[in-house]
Image (cartoon, rainbow over all chains, first blue to last red; front, side, top):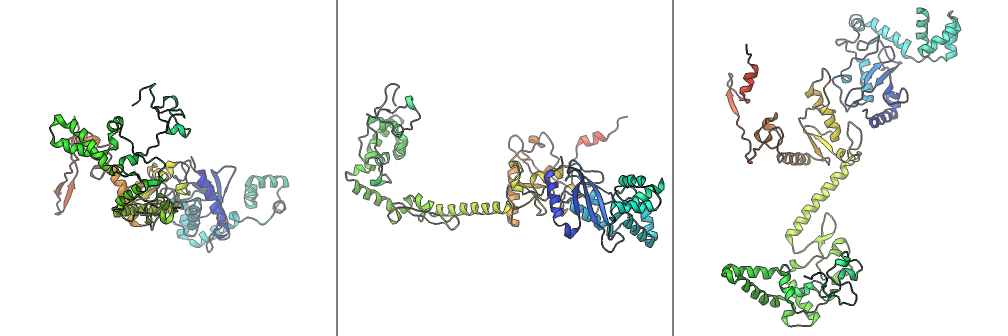
Length: 194
Length: 356
C-alpha cells in the first residue's frame, strides 16, 4: 500500500519552493499513483531552456521501493533511452533509499542531464556519439531540446494555420494535433510520415 | 466478629455519610438511634498526630477483651516483645506469657496511661515527645502542594523547596529521603524534557512526527547504532526487512542508514530521542540488558542452535540456569596469526559426502 500521507506531503513540499528549484510534481489524473514531474534543463548544457516532463508511477511498496520514472519528453542523452525515455540512474534502482523523495530523485535526474555518464550508457548510439564526436552530440541534444522540450509560444489556431500553410488539409491538421497533444513538431512529423 | 442477625449496635461510619456499599449486609448498625463509635484509634495506641484538632474523640476506652485479642496487628510492638519473650521461654508457656506481656506493655505505652485526663496537656506531651526526634514529624502535604493555610502555626514540618519541581517537599531532617526525592525528581524532569524535545522529531521516511503517529505501537523511535538519523521504529524495520531487489546489496542498501548509508547492525526501539551520546548509550545499554534477560528462541535451552552464536543479544542458558559456555578454539594460521575456528559439526561433513 502506497503511503499516501507521505506522497501528499512530498507534493506540498515540492510545489512550495517551485520558484527556486523549478521542479514540480503533479497528479496525472485523480490519483496519487500516476504523477507527472517537470524539471527545467540545467543552465550551461544543451538542455538549457527546455522543460522536461517525467512520468512517475509509484509502486505499492513506495517509499520502500523506488518510484518508476521515465522521460515523457524526448531527450538526447547517453543515459536516457531516446526511444522509450527509460532512465539509467542508480538511485532509481539498487541505490534507492526511503529517505529519498520524488523531489530529490528529480533533482538527481536534473544533475544527470548536466553530467552524463557515457561509460554506463542506456542508449548506446547516443553514448557512442558523445564519446566520438561531442560537437555533433551537443547540437543534436540542443535540436531535440528545441523541438520537444520547449513549449511553443504559439496558440492552437496559429499552429493550425502554420501547418495548413505547409499544404496539409485543415481537418487532418486539427485531428493530428489533437493526437500528439498539441505539439506542432510531433504533428508535422506524423503528417509527413503519412 | 458479629454473627449474622446479631449486629453490633454501633452506627456505621459509611452509613452516616450516606454511602455504605454493604447495605443490608453491613456488620455495623444502619439505625440512627444507635451511637456512633467516634473514638480515635490512634489516641488509643498512644499518639494521635492531630492532637486537639482530631475529629474523633480522644477519650480512654477500657480495652474490651474483643479488641485485645482481635486486633494484634494494631499492636506491633506487643508482638515483637512477646516474640522475644517466647524465644527464651519453654514452648508450652508461650501463650500464657505473651498474654501477660501484652497486658503489661500496652497501658504503659499509651498516652492516657500516664494518668492525665487533660487534652491540651496531653497534646503538649505528645508534641514534645515527638519533637525530640524531628525526623519523625510528618511533612505538611498542603505546603508540598504549594500553599499551607496554617502558615507558621502548622504542626507539621514544612519541607524545603526542591530545586527541580519547585515544591516544598524536601524533609529538612530526613537526608536519605531528600536525596532520593531529588534524584527521582531530576530523573523525571530530564525524561520530561527529553520527551518534549522528542515531540518535534520527524521520521525521515514517513515524514511524520514519530510521537504523533496514529497507533501507540508506532510512536517509538528506531535508533541506529552507528548514526544519529531519526526514524520511527515501523519505518526503519520495514525498510530493513524489505526483500532486496536484484543487484541490491543487503549490507550497503538495506542495513545501512537511509540517509547517510552508514552500516548499522541493529535497531534500538526507544520512546524518547536522545540529545547526547551518553543518553544514547544509556538507551542502548538498557535495551540490551532487557534482551539479555529473555531466553533466546533459537538457542532453546540448548536444544537448538542460534545463528547469531555468541553475539546474540538474548540469553543463552540451559534449563538448569547454567549459561552457555563459550569456548573459542584458536587455530594458528600459516602466517603466524591466529584465527578463531568455527564450530565444526559432523553433519557438515555428512551432508557433503556423496554416496555412490
